[in-house]
Every structure is written in structure tokens, then in C-alpha cells.
Image 1 (cartoon, one colour):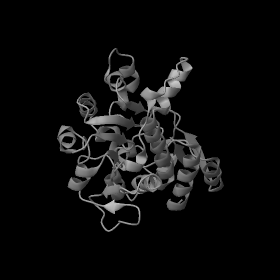
Image 2: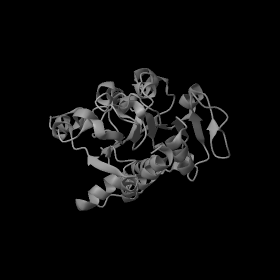
Image 3: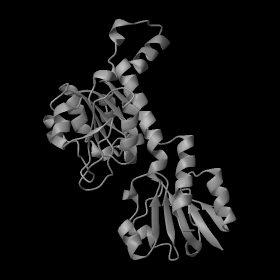
Image 4: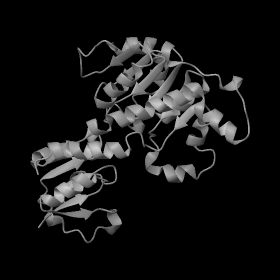
Length: 306
């Protein structure tokens, strides 16, 4: 009997597909409750952030043939080691692209138009118009760093609102079109009033947005991060808000996520300090839609050699 270890939600269609392929599905709960798993029978793993597959973890499964990553970002898998062992590794970044783009567009609109704050005031029986006067995206210059699946999807959403969209991607060129313009990082820093990151997390991109980057931004700007928390240094974000170089932030990810439950229980924690300013934070759900689960599942079904 060949088995697949399921450590992430998948679609019913994907579930049925695997059963039709004569796989037995073993659902991973956590490290403390996996003694029932026969590691030698596992030939495939479907994972997300719930199960980190470093070399030590991968070595537990001697007959592993493939790994499917629900979502984007392969930093949770030792891909180099998998390549050595001829283990196929696939992710599903296209499946979450539209969901992420819609989510951060909604966050940005809510931030600019004070939708979230005015709604809370209404719940508290306040009807306040002038303090909630907003800003339109039409006159903003959107700066996007990273033109992969989510970066390009976000650019398409922004093209509805403004014709000033600048994109920088270190590894891509020649992608300018009717609604975006490829620029250098220096030009983006000079002109952007909205800055959105769409980068994988690695040694080069960790704390990409740091004190030096903040100082190099010419304009006051809204910061958006929906990629990985450590890409934007939280202390830098707070510093930028305090000195008003950052006039707002839309954060679906935080570098403190690993210990977020403990942090939120402490008094005057860093997250509470951020929320004293014009900041929207969501719990890493930008790509977490019902539709995205269907799309990511289909993407893996199309890619993996079962």
C-alpha cells in the first residue's frame, strides 16, 4: 500500500483523485501525534507551513517520491536535498495569486478610504465624516517589488485604479506593458507612494525593507507586505510610522508569526504598537480563500508525476 501524508487542506477533487490513484491518505496532525505513521509507506507528502520539510524530516521517509507544496515559497522544503534524492518538488503559486491580489487591494482601499475605522465608529454610535475623509488611488504611484505570480496579479488589479504602476524585479526584464512600467529599484524608491512586496524569503530578501531602505524612499508611502513576514523588519515599520515616512501599512504577514500567540498576550507588544498608527493587519489569510484551495490543488494535480 502506498500512502500520501496530508499536512494541508486540499480540495475534495484532489482528495478523490488521490484515492482513485490507489493512495491511502494519512492526515498529519502535529509532531506529537504522528506515531501511527508508517514512514516506509509514505511516497508523497502534501504540505504547507504546518510541516517543515528540512533534510532531517525528509530522511524519515525512505521511499518518498514527491512533495506538493500548497501555496508558494519553497523555503519550507530542502529542495536541494530533494533534487539529490530525485524527489519531485512542486509548489502552487499561481493558485493563490488572485486571492492575494484581491486581499491586499481590499486592505489598501480600506486603509485609504478609512472604511475599517469609520465602521468601528458606527458600531460605537459615532457618525464622523470629516476625520474619515479618504484618499483616492487614482493619483498614487504604485511600486511593486517582485513580478511573479502575485506581483503581476496585483499589478492588474491596480491598473483599474491608476496608470502609474512601477515594477522592479531583479531576475526579470522586458515585462513592461500597457499598464505597468519596468524600472530600476532606484527609480521605484524615488517615485512610489505605495510600496508592495512580492518576494520569496531567502538570505538575500530577509529584512529587505530595513532602516536603510526606509531612508532611501523619497516619498511618504503606504507599505504592503503579503509575501513573508521577515522581508519587512517590524522595528523598521514601527520607526517609519513614528517618523511619518510610512503613512499607512497593510500587513498580512509579520516576522513575529512563529510566536504570535505568546506575543499577543504580552502588554504593549510590538503588534499593539503598530496598531496605534494607520495600520491594517490580517492573520496571513491573503491567499487563504476557498477558491484558492481549489486552484492550488488543481495546480499540483497538473504538475506532480503520480
